[in-house]
Amino acid sequence: MKARLIIIGESPIPNGKAYSLNRLVREASHDLLVMSDSDIRVKSCLLSHLAQEFQQKRIGLITCPYLAVPGQSIWSRLEAIGMNTELLGGVLVARMIEGMRFALGCTLAVRRNVLDDMGGFSYLQDFLAEDFVIGQRAAELGHGVLLSSCVIEHRIGSQGLLANLGHRLRWARSTRRSRPAGYWGQIFTYPLPWALLLWATSPMAWPLVLLTLLLRSAAAAATANYVLRDPVTRRQWWLLPLQDVLGLLVWISGFVGDTIVWRDRKCTVLRDGRLHVNS
Image (cartoon, rainbow, N blue to C red; front, side, top):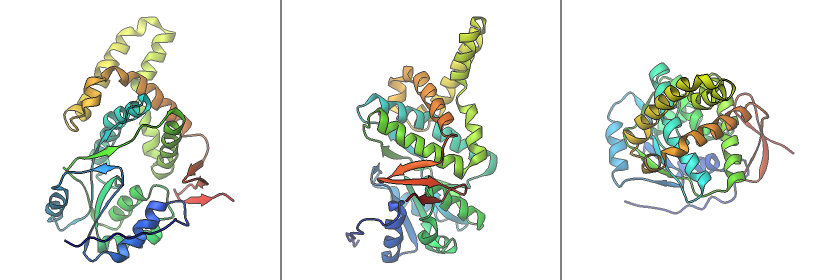
């Protein structure tokens, strides 16, 4: 197997990942392209696993679910618990309701002709959530999108509070633009904070709080424990209510404003999810 190191240089556009991939695709010599973020850890069998899933001729793109692995900070652990109990659950519900019409960007694989059909990364690089768009466009063009059975690890580091909230807010604003209806639907993923608020105003509502806590715990266990085998959620389950409250606040904040800072550039997320660099 031949490997080459290609130095792209500084990106002239905000979406540096898409810029780099646009350059790298030109150098690729095969028809199956596998793309992965730098903070990902995978098993040695990943490529053979994806190649086997591509044996289904209708499949044009495969996206991998991921287990968030936190660093040492409390904010990192809260974010990991949120990802491992909310994100995958939302993905599975969306797949059940409308099928796979999106992709997760940590690791995905695509046929070259599918990427060419949508205009390649020259088209995708204008979007903040180019990973979501590549899955959406593939489905719109009639290509099958598959959620892989191979779970990868996403190492999310140990950011402090402000940095952590900053990138969470960026994701929230990106999701609001990419999937407006789905973003509104996230209100159902935070039942516990609403139940606690009701309890604060009406102490007699404690049975509802207890029931909500049991249902939320069961939903968290279904994804974090039984699917992802997440040791953090299993050991520090008591952080789940705190993460739900924090997640709800970030979700509400995502409705306000369209400005983000990405790679030291101040940008506006337009209504169609494209980025505009503010002068």
